[in-house]
Image (cartoon, rainbow, N blue to C red; front, side, top):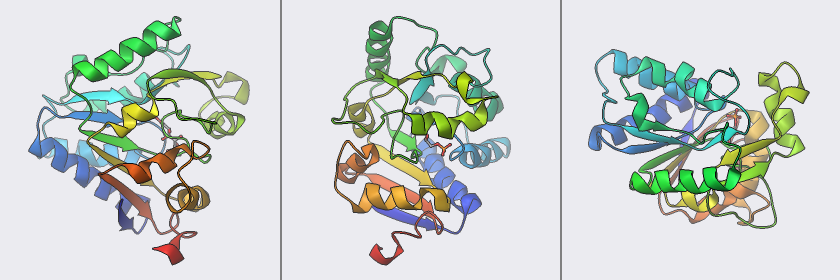
Length: 245
Ligand code: F6R
């Protein structure tokens, strides 16, 4: 595990964008695994700025996103497909046919999960997976559990995640209770994994995940075993672990 220390959110976003930018330059048709949430927004904004300056070309890049709410489609502003278009895809020269997310409107969970894993496989796997971390240690929507789930699956969101995500909805009742998410093996099979974590609110879970035992009760802890894992974290997020660095 490699740790890149950043001053604050803006600095962490630039550093994360630098890593993704290098990936795109080195392999123009790379497969990027992408995340939603507040953590990667600054990274996407930086990548958009470099694209606008002519420094980056996404025309051959392929993407797979980690997750999507069950029941939400592109016309719903809270869907992750909508988020990705609004925050990234609509501002760069990526071919929409090269972008992939689980289909939240597909009611047949088994079919959708098997299909999504076959999409990842057909792309040749993920070259670089971008992650955030939930307050409960989730990655994608792999919630704390008794065991790790390998492939794409349908999850019941925990109350902790529903509470955390309620800020994006009018009220908590509107937060979907289920989501499709890539599994832990899908994430571990990415050739390189980069996680961006900022803010004091994530400091304790960051310490638990990367300076504690590897356990499905803290799903992100499995990344301790990944051969090419980079954590980009700001000072606030590292404040609880700082004596262990
Ligand atoms: C989003 C995702 C989630 C988030 C996590 C952190 O696609 O997979 O695991 O990365 O919930 O969310 P933020 O960044 O909003 O704190």
